Amino acid sequence: MNDNQKEEPFLKDTGSGKKTPKYRAVLFDLDGTLNDSGPGIMNSVRYSLEKMGYEIPREETLRRFVGPSLVYSYKTFCHMDEAQARKAVDAYRECYHAGECFNLIIYDGIVELLSRLKKEKIRCAVVTSKPQNAALMILEHFDMMRFFDTLAGPDPDDPSNRKSVLIARALKQLDLAPSDAVMVGDSRFDIIGANEAGCDSVGVTYGYGTREELVENGATYLADSPGMIGRILSL
Image (tube, rainbow, N blue to C red; front, side, top):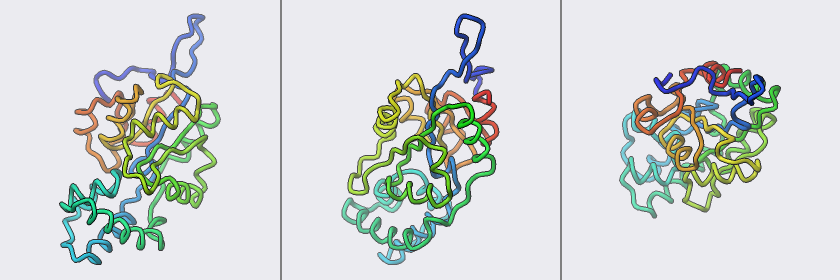
């Protein structure tokens, strides 16, 4: 946990001595936070690069494709221009939607955490850089959508995927203020997005980001496991 973390961040005193949940909603990133989708994503990246005649980068570079938008990743990690990146995304989707999208595992403890939040009547949302239709397909395939009140992801034809914009959309759909929610994610994009949107954040260290980037970008809390997320939220 961060040095700045409170003992019971999820509870606030109403003034009458009774403590109530500090947050009315928890917003979750998808890849690297709810599930380990690395194998399917990395296999699809390999396929796209082979099809386009690009050299396959090292495993550590392929891992960095998990989380950010694909256009950003191809441009940043493979030095493609916009047109090449979009062509690579098309090739990626050929492989990904042929079955690799389901090549993932739900992290141990996530279902229990979401079940507890639902029981406590805390609203939940998925806020992801993955195209919304793809995210919905995956959540429904693994029977996960039953835990969530809404899903905010970018339109597949819109390269804009700033987490702050997606967080704001989720909050609007939930009819809540930024102070009502906490964003949970594994990368700097989640933490930066939460800061820009005015939300607190939980940076998870078991995903594809690093503890250093979560701390450097100002995560309110850190969690090394789904179980620790629950403890941070005083569940």
